[in-house]
Length: 392
Ligand SMILES: [Zn+2]
Image (tube, rainbow, N blue to C red; front, side):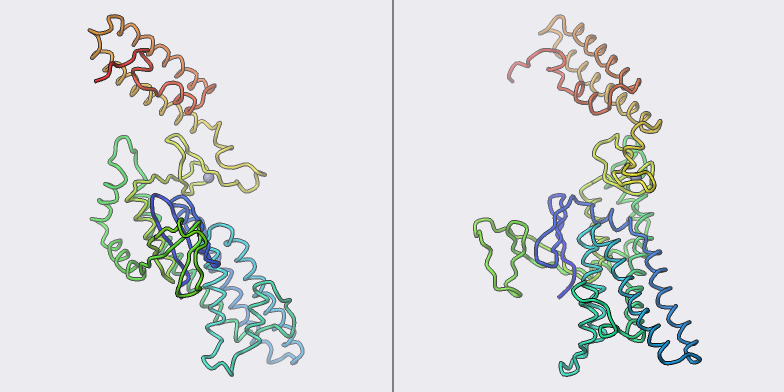
């Protein structure tokens, strides 16, 4: 059974979790979480743990059996700590990262060390997995030897390496599609199209990764998947059944690329935070800072730190000016069209213009936010001019 099942519909992202419940997020949540992970750091930590064993083992020729045993026990415990560290840094960030650690990586140990023949079932491996799960304490009885653990660490490293490569390939592509001024340049989809045409390696990447995805139709009810092939369980409320297509795979990088394409297809803007430079999904045209907590700044987020920055003020002012011009233009056009019907309409228009200028000054002085400005000024011409349009 593959580890990952994800559905991308209606600009939402649905991930089937280990207990068959469905975690829902805004489209893009996975891509952002994936780009945030420091895969290089994970590889380094895993590698040094694996290589540490090699170096130390050669010394043991000169050591006594008891010392060697003690060292192996400590090593086994350090691998448990490595796994728990992984779980802590990744699991809470996104349901797919939870599956990566607590299913894919964890189960590699089982599949590598469990023979096909049930009679040879290794209880020590099962017990070690229970230690990883936190249901059993680590001891001399539950430890595994470095010879068993080393191939497992190598497998984890290989998974991280694949994901690191995918991350390194995706970032410049995302920069091409999301960068640039949306006012002057073409939209996201057009930039995607240009990138697709000139970048042959991207076409190969997409082609390869789509082969790793297999679509499956799933019946769900209230954020839970009901699979007749696994559990003969019937959804409690038959009238609330929904049908969705999920992409099923063991290759997390293939899901990542798929989501990247869906973001482009839906023209969802992702932006790099002006403080930490990481990608986030902005709430409005003026959001320049993300919601991530800043290290060493207590509970403060980039957004809180950036709110009063000159950069944010400048963006607020520029966007407010743009909106001011847009609203004035469309109001003036509406006024011109109705001159005959309302003789004083141009005077009314000038009042609207003046009122807008006043509000704009408040944004420039920093006493009004862009969204307050938008709320007060971004209205229909009829409302601003104080006229009702006759029907037809
Ligand atoms: Zn940030």
